Image (cartoon, rainbow, N blue to C red; front, side):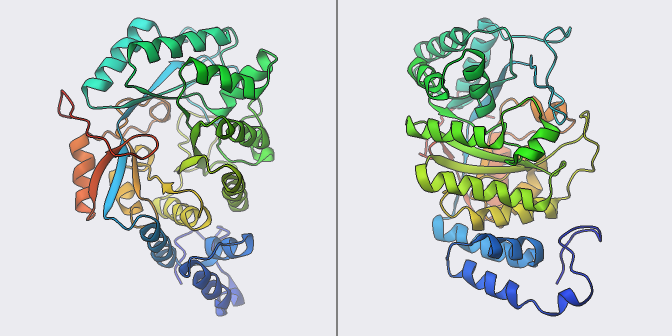
Length: 381
């Protein structure tokens, strides 16, 4: 059985270990029957199963959940309202310290231009994220949301990751629930799953020691779901974690989802090391596809899995549609954080449609909560 990993990888079987794959066959049979995988079965499949077997199992599960031959995507724009951050995460090439000459906070004029362009291009939402700014009061964010909601009532505001929410709760000495309540009342519609990296507190202490813990990230999401805010969940992998930590992450997301059913999608992507303070080679496409497939199999209660053309490029993202993904992510009219790490893929709406059609599916633009929309853009992308 081919594993597509180098000799030092934990996925390679050595010596007599590769003589008997009865455990793989048993775990694969569970997945093929649509039964929930426990940790042991997930480890067996992730560490030992052939990549093509994982693809077959994950694609079959995707078709059980989404039998229609469609692939969805959202029309949105990532707007980084500020690059000022006191976290100084080792994996981030985008942030600037508060006293850096390149730091900024977006103006209303610039925000207005970006929103108007997004809507003209057929977009339906904006994603707002920034760093942990030490000086902006919570009222600044509330005023921004109210202005956006009042000026463009048709716009879906998908904003502020769990680390930002937790940072404000600590900074302003109020509860996470109160921060979320105030932001929702001001106009927040949903939360992105950013800042998850790997949901293992020990690993987070290594790569982002000034950011919230794994438990705190999950608590923010659970509080958001209680308030009726839908969210996504993400994973950035391939830095200093082990394979077991990635499974920790998946099972932590699944546990919260069992209680809340608030996650609309899961989005894994590989760490991009250029211009960061973590020196590792980027993971190859097979490692990404393997994790994506296992994600689809473990997260039986998360309805959608997104492929990541922004980090992997259109060809691998297209292949991901046969490894468990049913969604092509975002039109991504603007993206700055991954680009700061030296990775810059661009796809127009026509490009996305072409790639999805070539894979044998029909592309459908959607909202954050997966309702179909007709964008009717003023400008054809």
